[in-house]
Image 1 (spheres, rainbow, N blue to C red):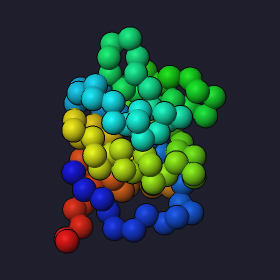
Image 2 (image 1 turned 180 degrees about the horizontal axis):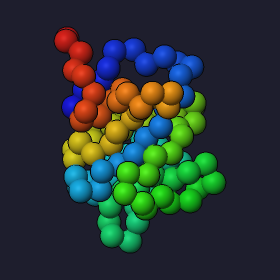
Image 3 (image 1 turned 135 degrees about the vertical axis):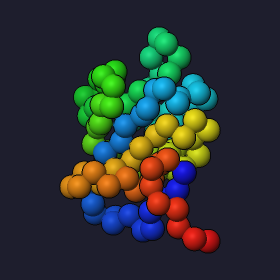
Length: 104
């Protein structure tokens, strides 16, 4: 899992969760409860701006600007490596299991 360089502070991002890899640990909910929530199956899902749980496979939601770094941190710390943060304009993953690693 990695983090693709600097995320443009103004560039909108979206997030989705691959429930097949979710461990139900809850770090994501701790980082950004406005964006992540558990469903009855014990797995985390994303919520839209109205707070509605999005349970469709691969459902993406826009990340509020003030939560962008919290959502990226959740993706970086997720033990299941199931959180994907992508740039809204082109779908390039900026944090999560499919993002490029940045050399230390």
